[in-house]
Amino acid sequence: KRIETVMGDAEQVAGLIQLATPRQGSAAAAGAITPRSNRLVSDQLRQLEEMRQQLEALRNENRELKLQTGGELSADQDEKVLQEFLVKLRAVLEMRSEGRFEQQLFDEYNGGLVQLSDEHLRELYSSFMLIYVEEYDEAVLE
Image (tube, rainbow, N blue to C red; front, top):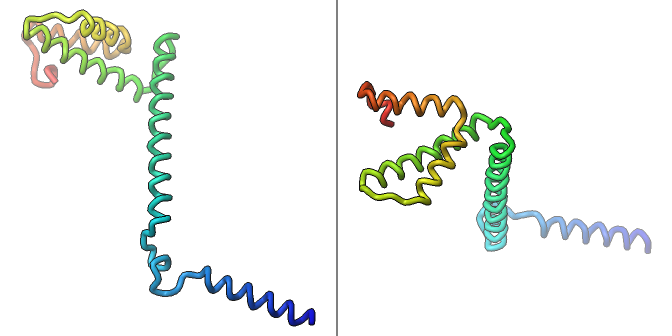
């Protein structure tokens, strides 16, 4: 009787394994997207996007803390500060060329200016000087 029970259990396990194993030509075996797998992928993509947003927020917070405490920025962070400043500079130049003045925009420009590294500040003022003495080229204007 014990042998029959063990044999029955073995047959049940074999049957379950066979049911769980994708058959040749089935959607699961072919790697087809099922509603369940599609939902899992959507959830994973949503979680990934949330993690990216959290990472960007932490990077921005880290950069702000470094700027407040006088810490050194990484090359990538320094470049990002420069690019953000150049957007503000362009906006101020457009504002002035239109003959108008917006205090908030000018304050943002000044805030960006003080965040620049010494190297970028020297480069900026060198470019301003070349423009002032009319010895600039296209690279300076970019």
